Length: 354
Ligand code: DAH
Image: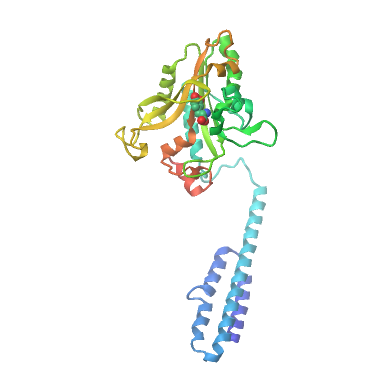
């Protein structure tokens, strides 16, 4: 047995040294380790060996097997390193003006739904705005009529930076004040209504499960002008949602409390699955809760410099906060919110063709 193993070891060493790629390595591995491989043949021969020599022979085979395994792994590592080095050498001559041979990569479902909504709102005259992820307490809360120690803050516990007064925004409403200041002059001097949507990543201190994430996306929208009323709000929301779901959706408003709107609403759409008869996805109510919204609170317009204390109702406006992540779950039928953040390409790349 000893001689046989020695002969096999010599053969293995010779073959391994000539291996240049992973497929040759795998071939060699199979010729030694598979059910029909050389090591299995040795095992079969054990049966014919006298009992008193069996133990020693078995140990010899086992340690040879271990050795072969280790040397395979080392060779594999060596080849991986070579492959990486080759790739890096190639990258140096990378020419970004070269067209790609094959289309590759795909858009994240949140990006897809965000762009779709941006197109719809742009076609209705809205500007699309970007805003910071790190904001201060004033923009996230105080300018939105949520003073310090207001209980509404409890629902939006977020992440505070060690720099004083800096936090990760817990909702896209945090950009409202900035938008009002950016477009306020054009409204007051030229009569140009403020119509803007601002998508963004939001953060909350949440326990993560299939429906909750600490990082998610919203799209906020505001429209401010003279005589803006709830009818305008309903019209824009209904038009936009009918486009998103590619059918005529029925909406309803229920009262909802948010300190930065008065009156505030929860906007529901008639369940797209059962058409309002009741089914598990709408918890048998016939309606799906989709988007909180309302008429912008006078204090918020005041903070934004739109109205003055002397004339607090000169301009009015509506605001809404669409949950982009939730909308993507509904539109693409994704049952677990964690799919969006865990970077699993086999799940995320499925949205490319939709
Ligand atoms: N910012 C709120 C949240 O994330 C959602 C919201 C409610 C936004 C009402 C609005 C609104 O613009 O009018 O919980």
